[in-house]
Length: 363
Image (cartoon, rainbow, N blue to C red):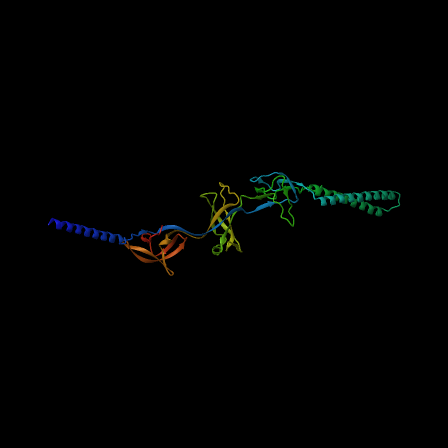
Protein backbone atom coordinates (compact mmCIF):
# COMPACT_ATOMS: atom_id res chain seq x y z
CA UNK A 1 0.00 0.00 0.00
CA UNK A 2 2.67 2.55 0.88
CA UNK A 3 4.48 1.66 -2.34
CA UNK A 4 1.42 2.72 -4.34
CA UNK A 5 1.08 6.04 -2.54
CA UNK A 6 4.60 7.27 -3.40
CA UNK A 7 4.18 7.17 -7.20
CA UNK A 8 0.76 8.75 -6.84
CA UNK A 9 2.16 11.63 -4.78
CA UNK A 10 4.95 12.19 -7.27
CA UNK A 11 2.44 12.33 -10.12
CA UNK A 12 0.24 14.78 -8.24
CA UNK A 13 3.23 17.04 -7.47
CA UNK A 14 4.40 17.05 -11.08
CA UNK A 15 0.92 17.85 -12.36
CA UNK A 16 0.53 20.59 -9.74
CA UNK A 17 3.85 22.18 -10.66
CA UNK A 18 2.95 22.06 -14.35
CA UNK A 19 -0.44 23.62 -13.69
CA UNK A 20 1.07 26.37 -11.56
CA UNK A 21 3.59 27.14 -14.29
CA UNK A 22 0.80 27.48 -16.86
CA UNK A 23 -1.16 29.75 -14.53
CA UNK A 24 1.90 31.92 -13.85
CA UNK A 25 2.66 32.32 -17.53
CA UNK A 26 -0.97 33.17 -18.24
CA UNK A 27 -1.02 35.87 -15.59
CA UNK A 28 2.23 37.31 -16.88
CA UNK A 29 0.86 37.46 -20.39
CA UNK A 30 -2.30 39.32 -19.41
CA UNK A 31 -1.99 43.09 -20.24
CA UNK A 32 -1.98 45.30 -17.19
CA UNK A 33 -4.68 47.96 -17.12
CA UNK A 34 -3.28 51.39 -18.09
CA UNK A 35 -3.75 54.09 -15.48
CA UNK A 36 -3.88 57.52 -17.16
CA UNK A 37 -2.79 60.69 -15.45
CA UNK A 38 -5.08 63.70 -15.43
CA UNK A 39 -4.53 67.44 -15.38
CA UNK A 40 -6.62 70.58 -15.25
CA UNK A 41 -6.52 73.78 -17.33
CA UNK A 42 -4.44 76.71 -16.05
CA UNK A 43 -4.47 80.47 -16.40
CA UNK A 44 -1.48 81.52 -18.53
CA UNK A 45 -0.12 84.35 -20.64
CA UNK A 46 -0.05 83.13 -24.25
CA UNK A 47 2.43 84.91 -26.49
CA UNK A 48 2.75 84.06 -30.18
CA UNK A 49 6.13 85.15 -31.47
CA UNK A 50 8.78 84.57 -34.09
CA UNK A 51 12.50 84.57 -33.36
CA UNK A 52 14.98 86.53 -35.48
CA UNK A 53 18.69 85.82 -34.98
CA UNK A 54 21.06 88.73 -35.48
CA UNK A 55 23.40 91.14 -33.71
CA UNK A 56 23.51 94.47 -31.88
CA UNK A 57 25.11 97.17 -34.03
CA UNK A 58 25.42 100.98 -33.92
CA UNK A 59 22.83 102.78 -35.98
CA UNK A 60 25.55 104.83 -37.63
CA UNK A 61 29.15 103.64 -37.87
CA UNK A 62 31.57 105.90 -39.77
CA UNK A 63 34.78 104.68 -41.37
CA UNK A 64 37.41 107.42 -41.44
CA UNK A 65 39.48 107.34 -44.66
CA UNK A 66 42.64 109.29 -45.56
CA UNK A 67 42.72 111.91 -48.33
CA UNK A 68 46.33 111.15 -49.22
CA UNK A 69 48.41 108.01 -49.58
CA UNK A 70 51.45 107.42 -47.42
CA UNK A 71 52.68 105.81 -44.21
CA UNK A 72 51.11 106.15 -40.77
CA UNK A 73 53.55 108.33 -38.83
CA UNK A 74 51.57 108.69 -35.59
CA UNK A 75 48.29 107.35 -34.18
CA UNK A 76 46.57 109.49 -31.57
CA UNK A 77 43.66 107.21 -30.58
CA UNK A 78 42.99 103.64 -29.48
CA UNK A 79 39.82 101.50 -29.62
CA UNK A 80 37.45 102.30 -26.78
CA UNK A 81 38.26 106.01 -26.57
CA UNK A 82 35.63 108.70 -27.01
CA UNK A 83 36.47 111.37 -29.57
CA UNK A 84 34.90 114.65 -30.59
CA UNK A 85 34.25 115.84 -34.11
CA UNK A 86 37.40 117.29 -35.76
CA UNK A 87 39.66 115.61 -33.17
CA UNK A 88 43.04 114.50 -34.54
CA UNK A 89 43.23 110.74 -35.10
CA UNK A 90 46.44 110.17 -37.04
CA UNK A 91 49.25 111.80 -39.01
CA UNK A 92 50.43 110.47 -42.36
CA UNK A 93 53.93 110.87 -43.75
CA UNK A 94 53.60 111.57 -47.46
CA UNK A 95 55.62 109.41 -49.83
CA UNK A 96 55.52 111.60 -52.97
CA UNK A 97 55.12 110.03 -56.37
CA UNK A 98 58.34 110.48 -58.37
CA UNK A 99 56.57 111.57 -61.57
CA UNK A 100 54.29 114.06 -59.81
CA UNK A 101 57.20 115.45 -57.81
CA UNK A 102 59.34 115.89 -60.94
CA UNK A 103 56.49 117.63 -62.78
CA UNK A 104 55.85 119.94 -59.82
CA UNK A 105 59.53 120.91 -59.56
CA UNK A 106 59.67 121.54 -63.32
CA UNK A 107 56.56 123.73 -63.09
CA UNK A 108 58.24 125.81 -60.36
CA UNK A 109 61.37 126.30 -62.45
CA UNK A 110 59.33 127.33 -65.50
CA UNK A 111 57.18 129.72 -63.47
CA UNK A 112 60.30 131.29 -61.90
CA UNK A 113 61.83 131.95 -65.33
CA UNK A 114 58.59 133.55 -66.58
CA UNK A 115 58.29 135.67 -63.46
CA UNK A 116 61.91 136.90 -63.69
CA UNK A 117 61.49 137.80 -67.36
CA UNK A 118 58.24 139.62 -66.63
CA UNK A 119 59.89 141.53 -63.77
CA UNK A 120 62.78 142.65 -66.02
CA UNK A 121 60.39 143.70 -68.77
CA UNK A 122 58.33 145.68 -66.24
CA UNK A 123 61.48 147.43 -65.02
CA UNK A 124 62.34 148.54 -68.59
CA UNK A 125 58.80 149.77 -69.19
CA UNK A 126 58.97 151.71 -65.92
CA UNK A 127 61.95 153.68 -67.22
CA UNK A 128 60.16 154.42 -70.51
CA UNK A 129 57.11 155.62 -68.54
CA UNK A 130 59.28 157.97 -66.49
CA UNK A 131 60.81 159.38 -69.73
CA UNK A 132 57.36 159.97 -71.19
CA UNK A 133 57.92 157.45 -73.98
CA UNK A 134 55.18 155.08 -72.78
CA UNK A 135 51.56 155.72 -71.89
CA UNK A 136 50.08 154.72 -68.55
CA UNK A 137 47.63 152.36 -70.28
CA UNK A 138 50.43 150.42 -71.99
CA UNK A 139 52.43 150.29 -68.74
CA UNK A 140 49.41 148.86 -66.90
CA UNK A 141 49.37 145.91 -69.32
CA UNK A 142 52.97 145.03 -68.45
CA UNK A 143 52.20 145.50 -64.75
CA UNK A 144 49.35 143.03 -65.07
CA UNK A 145 51.54 140.52 -66.93
CA UNK A 146 54.20 140.74 -64.20
CA UNK A 147 51.60 140.21 -61.46
CA UNK A 148 50.20 137.17 -63.28
CA UNK A 149 53.67 135.62 -63.65
CA UNK A 150 54.27 136.20 -59.92
CA UNK A 151 50.98 134.52 -59.07
CA UNK A 152 51.81 131.56 -61.32
CA UNK A 153 55.12 131.11 -59.48
CA UNK A 154 53.33 131.16 -56.12
CA UNK A 155 50.82 128.59 -57.36
CA UNK A 156 53.57 126.30 -58.65
CA UNK A 157 55.40 126.49 -55.31
CA UNK A 158 52.16 125.70 -53.47
CA UNK A 159 51.57 122.68 -55.71
CA UNK A 160 55.11 121.46 -55.04
CA UNK A 161 54.53 121.80 -51.30
CA UNK A 162 51.24 119.92 -51.67
CA UNK A 163 52.99 117.02 -53.44
CA UNK A 164 55.74 116.87 -50.84
CA UNK A 165 53.82 117.52 -47.61
CA UNK A 166 50.21 116.79 -48.47
CA UNK A 167 49.02 120.34 -47.84
CA UNK A 168 48.97 123.68 -49.58
CA UNK A 169 51.31 126.36 -48.17
CA UNK A 170 48.40 128.72 -47.50
CA UNK A 171 45.73 126.17 -46.64
CA UNK A 172 44.42 125.95 -43.09
CA UNK A 173 43.53 122.25 -43.49
CA UNK A 174 46.38 119.77 -43.71
CA UNK A 175 45.41 116.70 -45.72
CA UNK A 176 47.95 114.42 -44.04
CA UNK A 177 46.34 115.12 -40.67
CA UNK A 178 43.37 112.76 -40.26
CA UNK A 179 40.55 114.15 -38.13
CA UNK A 180 37.32 112.57 -36.95
CA UNK A 181 34.23 113.67 -38.85
CA UNK A 182 31.83 112.66 -36.04
CA UNK A 183 31.75 112.36 -32.27
CA UNK A 184 31.56 108.91 -30.68
CA UNK A 185 33.53 105.88 -29.55
CA UNK A 186 36.45 104.49 -31.54
CA UNK A 187 35.42 100.89 -32.26
CA UNK A 188 38.52 99.79 -34.10
CA UNK A 189 41.80 101.08 -35.48
CA UNK A 190 42.77 98.51 -38.14
CA UNK A 191 46.12 100.17 -39.02
CA UNK A 192 49.43 100.39 -37.20
CA UNK A 193 52.13 103.03 -37.07
CA UNK A 194 54.46 102.44 -40.00
CA UNK A 195 51.77 100.82 -42.11
CA UNK A 196 50.93 102.06 -45.60
CA UNK A 197 47.54 103.58 -46.38
CA UNK A 198 45.77 104.42 -49.63
CA UNK A 199 43.70 107.54 -50.18
CA UNK A 200 40.00 107.33 -50.92
CA UNK A 201 39.15 108.31 -54.49
CA UNK A 202 36.78 107.47 -57.33
CA UNK A 203 38.56 104.18 -58.02
CA UNK A 204 39.45 103.01 -54.51
CA UNK A 205 37.52 103.15 -51.26
CA UNK A 206 40.75 103.78 -49.36
CA UNK A 207 42.25 102.35 -46.20
CA UNK A 208 40.16 102.68 -43.03
CA UNK A 209 42.06 104.58 -40.33
CA UNK A 210 39.38 104.16 -37.65
CA UNK A 211 35.72 103.23 -37.22
CA UNK A 212 33.68 105.55 -34.99
CA UNK A 213 30.09 105.13 -33.78
CA UNK A 214 27.62 106.55 -31.28
CA UNK A 215 27.26 103.70 -28.75
CA UNK A 216 24.23 105.37 -27.19
CA UNK A 217 22.19 104.69 -30.32
CA UNK A 218 22.20 100.95 -30.96
CA UNK A 219 19.83 98.83 -33.03
CA UNK A 220 19.19 95.14 -33.50
CA UNK A 221 19.74 93.83 -37.03
CA UNK A 222 18.59 90.32 -37.85
CA UNK A 223 16.91 88.15 -40.44
CA UNK A 224 13.58 86.33 -40.57
CA UNK A 225 12.42 83.58 -42.90
CA UNK A 226 10.03 84.37 -45.72
CA UNK A 227 7.36 82.20 -44.05
CA UNK A 228 7.27 84.63 -41.11
CA UNK A 229 7.88 88.01 -42.71
CA UNK A 230 4.27 88.31 -43.90
CA UNK A 231 3.14 88.37 -40.26
CA UNK A 232 5.36 91.31 -39.33
CA UNK A 233 4.69 95.01 -39.47
CA UNK A 234 6.56 98.06 -38.32
CA UNK A 235 5.81 99.14 -34.76
CA UNK A 236 5.59 95.62 -33.31
CA UNK A 237 7.16 95.15 -29.90
CA UNK A 238 10.22 92.94 -29.59
CA UNK A 239 12.10 91.39 -26.70
CA UNK A 240 15.84 91.13 -27.32
CA UNK A 241 18.08 88.59 -25.58
CA UNK A 242 21.83 89.16 -25.82
CA UNK A 243 23.97 86.05 -25.60
CA UNK A 244 26.77 87.70 -23.63
CA UNK A 245 24.36 89.09 -21.02
CA UNK A 246 22.63 86.13 -19.42
CA UNK A 247 19.12 86.56 -18.02
CA UNK A 248 18.87 90.10 -19.39
CA UNK A 249 16.27 91.16 -21.93
CA UNK A 250 15.84 94.52 -23.56
CA UNK A 251 12.58 95.86 -24.99
CA UNK A 252 12.47 97.34 -28.44
CA UNK A 253 10.27 98.29 -31.36
CA UNK A 254 10.45 96.92 -34.90
CA UNK A 255 11.21 99.84 -37.21
CA UNK A 256 12.29 98.35 -40.54
CA UNK A 257 11.45 95.30 -42.68
CA UNK A 258 13.44 94.83 -45.88
CA UNK A 259 11.33 95.01 -49.06
CA UNK A 260 13.61 92.48 -50.76
CA UNK A 261 14.73 89.05 -49.56
CA UNK A 262 18.22 87.59 -49.82
CA UNK A 263 18.93 83.90 -50.63
CA UNK A 264 20.65 82.08 -47.77
CA UNK A 265 21.36 78.33 -47.86
CA UNK A 266 18.36 77.53 -50.00
CA UNK A 267 15.90 79.84 -48.22
CA UNK A 268 14.90 83.46 -48.66
CA UNK A 269 15.48 85.71 -45.66
CA UNK A 270 14.50 89.31 -45.02
CA UNK A 271 16.48 91.80 -42.96
CA UNK A 272 14.71 93.42 -40.02
CA UNK A 273 15.84 96.21 -37.70
CA UNK A 274 14.56 97.12 -34.24
CA UNK A 275 15.25 100.08 -31.98
CA UNK A 276 16.53 99.08 -28.53
CA UNK A 277 15.55 100.76 -25.29
CA UNK A 278 18.91 100.81 -23.51
CA UNK A 279 19.42 100.56 -19.77
CA UNK A 280 21.93 102.92 -18.18
CA UNK A 281 23.47 100.26 -15.94
CA UNK A 282 24.51 98.02 -18.83
CA UNK A 283 27.23 98.65 -21.40
CA UNK A 284 26.50 96.89 -24.68
CA UNK A 285 29.33 96.29 -27.10
CA UNK A 286 28.97 96.42 -30.85
CA UNK A 287 28.29 93.15 -32.70
CA UNK A 288 27.01 91.25 -29.67
CA UNK A 289 25.05 88.28 -31.01
CA UNK A 290 21.39 88.45 -30.06
CA UNK A 291 17.94 86.98 -30.71
CA UNK A 292 14.84 89.11 -31.03
CA UNK A 293 11.47 87.68 -30.06
CA UNK A 294 9.01 89.58 -32.24
CA UNK A 295 5.62 89.45 -30.57
CA UNK A 296 2.93 88.72 -33.17
CA UNK A 297 0.00 88.41 -30.74
CA UNK A 298 -0.46 88.23 -26.98
CA UNK A 299 -3.23 87.31 -24.54
CA UNK A 300 -2.78 87.54 -20.79
CA UNK A 301 -4.31 85.35 -18.06
CA UNK A 302 -6.40 83.13 -20.30
CA UNK A 303 -7.53 79.54 -19.74
CA UNK A 304 -5.02 77.27 -21.44
CA UNK A 305 -4.00 73.63 -21.81
CA UNK A 306 -0.94 71.91 -23.31
CA UNK A 307 -1.12 71.33 -27.06
CA UNK A 308 -0.44 67.61 -26.50
CA UNK A 309 -3.88 67.11 -24.92
CA UNK A 310 -5.77 68.21 -28.03
CA UNK A 311 -6.99 65.79 -30.71
CA UNK A 312 -8.12 66.99 -34.12
CA UNK A 313 -10.74 65.57 -36.43
CA UNK A 314 -10.81 67.75 -39.49
CA UNK A 315 -11.38 71.32 -38.35
CA UNK A 316 -12.74 70.29 -34.95
CA UNK A 317 -10.70 69.98 -31.75
CA UNK A 318 -11.43 67.55 -28.90
CA UNK A 319 -10.09 66.75 -25.44
CA UNK A 320 -10.78 63.66 -23.33
CA UNK A 321 -12.58 64.59 -20.12
CA UNK A 322 -12.71 62.32 -17.05
CA UNK A 323 -16.33 61.35 -16.25
CA UNK A 324 -15.49 58.63 -13.70
CA UNK A 325 -12.52 56.80 -12.25
CA UNK A 326 -10.34 56.13 -15.31
CA UNK A 327 -13.37 56.70 -17.54
CA UNK A 328 -13.09 59.35 -20.26
CA UNK A 329 -15.18 60.83 -23.01
CA UNK A 330 -14.34 63.11 -25.92
CA UNK A 331 -15.57 66.67 -25.63
CA UNK A 332 -15.31 69.35 -28.35
CA UNK A 333 -13.53 72.58 -27.41
CA UNK A 334 -13.03 75.94 -29.08
CA UNK A 335 -9.39 76.95 -29.17
CA UNK A 336 -7.79 80.35 -29.43
CA UNK A 337 -4.21 81.64 -29.51
CA UNK A 338 -1.37 79.12 -29.40
CA UNK A 339 2.35 79.57 -28.79
CA UNK A 340 3.24 76.04 -29.94
CA UNK A 341 3.36 74.66 -26.39
CA UNK A 342 0.13 75.84 -24.78
CA UNK A 343 -3.14 76.80 -26.42
CA UNK A 344 -5.97 79.03 -25.25
CA UNK A 345 -9.33 77.35 -24.62
CA UNK A 346 -12.18 79.72 -25.44
CA UNK A 347 -15.03 77.35 -24.51
CA UNK A 348 -15.91 73.70 -23.82
CA UNK A 349 -14.21 73.17 -20.43
CA UNK A 350 -13.50 75.11 -17.25
CA UNK A 351 -10.76 75.23 -14.63
CA UNK A 352 -12.19 72.26 -12.67
CA UNK A 353 -12.37 69.91 -15.65
CA UNK A 354 -10.00 66.94 -15.39
CA UNK A 355 -8.36 66.07 -18.69
CA UNK A 356 -6.77 62.82 -19.76
CA UNK A 357 -3.03 62.93 -20.36
CA UNK A 358 -2.21 60.57 -23.25
CA UNK A 359 0.44 57.94 -22.57
CA UNK A 360 3.91 59.24 -23.34
CA UNK A 361 2.90 62.90 -23.16
CA UNK A 362 5.17 65.04 -21.02
CA UNK A 363 3.68 68.12 -19.43
